[in-house]
Amino acid sequence: MEEEGSRRRPSDAVLCECSVLAARRTARSRTKAVVVNPRTSSQRRFRRFIESIVRKVFDNQRKSPRDNVSAASATQIQADVTPTKSAHLAELNVVSPPKRTASAPASRLNLNGTLDTNGNYGRKSASQSDLNFSAELSVAAPTKNAIPELDLTFDNYNDEQYRPTPKPAPVVSRPLPPKPQAPKEPFYYPQGKPVPQLQNDTALRRVCEVFRSFPNQKCTLENMPAVCDAAGLPLYWKMPVFLAITNDEDRLASQVDFTSWWKAMTSVAHDEAARFVYTLSVGSRSYLQPEDFYEMLMDIIHTHPGLAFYREATEFHDKYCQVVMTRIFWNDAHSWSGKLTTDRLRKGGVLQAIRNLQFDDDINKSLRYFSYEHFYVVYCKFWEIDSDHDLKITSQDLAQHAGGALVPMVVDRIFSGAVCMNPTKVRHLEEIGLAEFTQFLLAEEDKTHPTSIEYWFRILDTDGDGIVTLYDMEEFHTQVQKKLAAEGIDSMAFPDVACQLIDMLNVPGGTTSFRLSDLKKSSLRGRFINTFVNWRKFFAQETNEGSESPRIEDEGGQELTEWDRYCIEEYEAMMEDDQADAETISLNLEEDDVRTSLAYHDVL
Picture: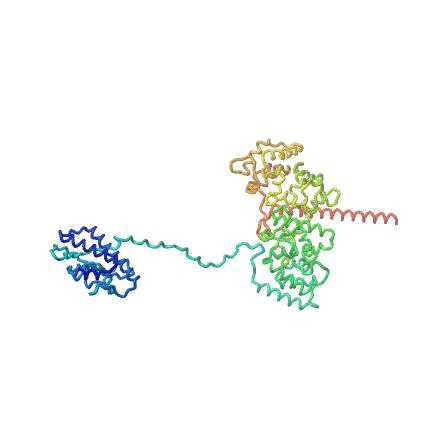
């Protein structure tokens, strides 16, 4: 029987090893009762589990249908492992080995199945419900001829005791795709916010209908008011528009000319300011210069009802244009570069003033720009100090302004080019014209205007470092004191005057120098400037300290500026002088007539 059993043993090394282990265990169990060490028994069970897996791998590699093994095994282990989605191990059934006999060697393992009578393995499927581990371990006293039966019971069997729990895969946090957002609308439009194309096309169709009503569909300058009205342009744009569509040529304007110019202009200029700059500069610049207004102002002189009396005096037309152009840049440009940008044009008031000209026949109501009375005052003041009447004044002529009220140092600074708006004139000037004198008179008579403050700060800042120190102030005020002393008027010493000046400006930190921003913030900037430039006004404000000029309002209820009040007073005085001169001339003529008649009577 032993030989027959040895012949049935497989040549598998794993099976042999399992048989040897079973025999050793049986021998030890015969001698004494087995005391199961939980740790040792766990290791053994794990080793058995690994051996069964290795055997299964070898069986699959051999691909043999069956193995001739003995019909019965001394040890039978049933293990059903069914992979599931959970981390638990499938059911493992360990059955106590049968009693060892000669025909049944005790070294057969069964994985996921049972041993048949020949020792072959049959696959046994495990149900999904058998996922709990249960086993019974029983230890019996050894007998003489039989292997003691062990009843192994595994409570709380956990596979993680024998293999590490795999770490969960790291969760890769990917940023969410950005939410689609509507494109942000630009907040800055250098050429104005674009208007719908339909609006431009509608205006062009209206203009085309107007052109069809003209002979040969061509228009002259006299027809341009209807064209500007159809295009939605102010009336007094008619001359610049006519020159733009005809390319400044002496010919009639056709519908094709206007269409070409309109499409080019509306494609880059979208608001009134941008279109005005494009029209006057013929699309060549993004800013305006004083000479760009000349043609438009000449058209205003020839067509505005308020200047009908002035049209015959052609020798004064250029003078009126110079004064008006200087006032436009003085009030709206806020720059010493001689350029009026589109942005400054939007913030200024000249565009609205041009639009208002077509609704008001009184040109003198346009106080800031087009008033004829203001022009008359400026030109008369210029004519008074122009000794040779060559329309150029020298430093000696300017020193005679207002009875010699200006100190010599101020006159020298004006002719040094420090306050010249023409960038080409940067050197010392020998003489100035009507435009430069207009700037001086505007600054002299209204020292609260922002451009006037900049004008006088440039005069006082002799070194051009942007700071006026006590040394600079003392130089100017010393000459004022000399003028007062020549007139027999006593004045305070400069240290006392300096204390008053510092209190006027209220400079933070109590510094003795000031900047342009400090001068603009002060409400007493006019009194401060008079202390250094005009000795007559300085004396008047010192003797009338505390008295304020009365508030004067125009027809619209707005307060008149110091310049407006000055022009009103001077114009009325000039009219009275002219009337007195006219009466004197009339009386002289009457006396001459009487004398002539008497002489003629004596002759007879």
